[in-house]
Length: 277
Image (cartoon, rainbow, N blue to C red; front, side, top):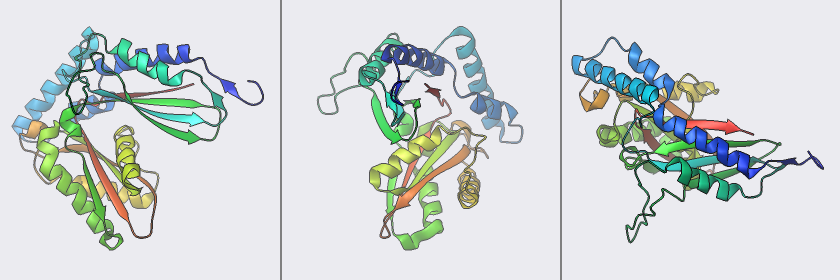
């Protein structure tokens, strides 16, 4: 620590991120596996599908297999403390992606030519500048099946909570069957368009056991979860009571004339991790 600045070696970042990615791709969120294992009261087909998903996750972890053939596009959400110096951070994240995905399916292509980059790089990197001397890197493997079902709703402020609930239920009703349910439903409310979308992505990485610390937001999460599960889509879209395992909402202040609501669906193969330096 010099002049109150914390210096972090980007080589250490690369090594740690490579290990994190490899572990995440073979070990889906343990909370998801645990919740699926605990389901006892649902339709017969849904229970059978839940059992198969759990079995798949256990085998993947034990044998080091990829939990899903779609190893996703690497998304990094970086919280960079304003007293942190890490020269080479961008290159470290790119090289970590290339190394960790070396044996994975190559799923990243130019959007116009559709030519594959051949190495799953570059990753998506979102950086938040925060106070302090910590560097936190969150990783998310985002598959196309769930990401294709994302929605952005530009509501009127007068639409209020009822409008938010309707928007989220609409997104799940229209896209939930194609997003490999049971789902983690991430909702971003506020800011501007891109703020809401990134909030929704951050929300799906929140632990299932960690509801919003705000009472009003937590009640909204519970209400939406009940309504989403009442849709009857069910596990693997086979019908039943478990369309979503959780609804997580993140909020940010917004303009008095706006109410942006983004919905990001995450499949049951929820692969994410976080590391702090």
